Picture (tube, rainbow, N blue to C red):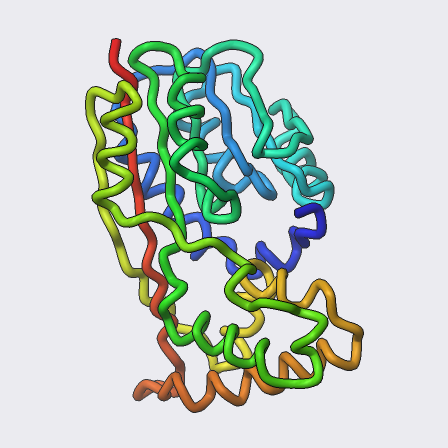
Length: 259
């Protein structure tokens, strides 16, 4: 997924960084010698890790050149590595693998998460946050618009854009069965006040809309976005101040490998 646009992503940097901060706050490590920020993006989550663990060997890993370029500009003292996240292997066992809003793009969590746990040193932590919003109007309408229009053939199966994540109970059993002594799970819904339906489109152009827009010509892209915005205007009513509220559920987990 090399076509991520850092500037588009960072248009809502404060809102996107808040879940990373909430995840990091529950990591039960007093100190760490080696930390991996898996799917580091433009470095907003890496900056939090650098502040929390200033003495750690901190490595940001991502597959998107534009994201890595922005991360290196923001944090020139941190090492950033280009790698396919499905195959990334740390050079030595880390104390913490931090994966903020990235694993939802990767398949086969039943194999992926135990593999990440096995990479940790004994007592190390896997900290993961994933959007859990495929059933929200923003994403249901995205798929509906993708399936109906002159762009439908180019997009293909809208449901294939992102594999649904597992239920919280499944992650608990999966991680406990992968030699984790503790598994901390929670789900939070953030309500983001945005200016209007166009702002929801702008938010999702940096993330969820990418698989839909990537295959389209400029003409079909414009048509798709216009149709999607019209559907959002009907689905998201205005608040008293004229804004709309984007509900954004996220699933969090912090698992500690047994010593």
